[in-house]
Length: 113
Length: 115
Image (cartoon, rainbow over all chains, first blue to last red; front, side, top):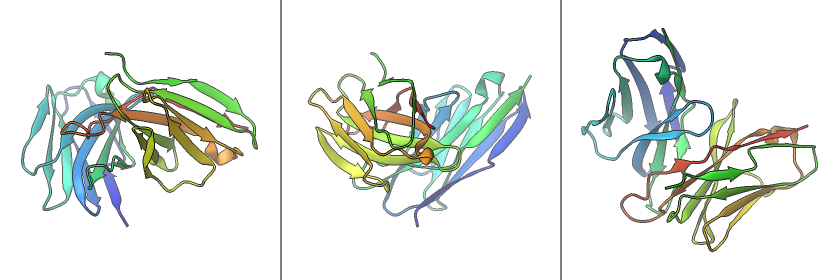
């Protein structure tokens, strides 16, 4: 059965800390992995990863995919209270017409002042 | 560019009733996907519409249905509501084809409470 597993489920850190969130997957016909940040309502898009070993960066956030070991990590450096949210990873499968994203349960990150 | 909009934002219904939710995608996006989010099950895919046709379907009963109009706006209908249908219903839009088709952008969601 296809599955997407995120760890840890929750994390509490202090401002300035660096965190690493994990997402492992076992799906057939893997196409891409996406990361979203969900604060109160709608998840907002962070990254899409399709190729192994290529790091994507956006400010203090970065992510990388390992298609051999079937996982991705999301790093957040110098965390701020505004980073507090649930971080979701989702996997897209082939064919390209399949837009069914399979989500992990999410990691709830709390950043304390 | 305006984002994805969903109406209504909140809804309270009783068991046995039916409900229709609406989603307007980002201008130019032709794909609309619907998701159900509950604390117990997380985010689960309901179905996707592209060019007025259902292209993909998740593992939900037939009480859940949808449609898409020629302007790409989509509606989702749930009939014979059950208590377990209480959830946040999110729609996401994407181009649906081409190299950037994978990126889906979510609307604010409709919070449905069934009593």
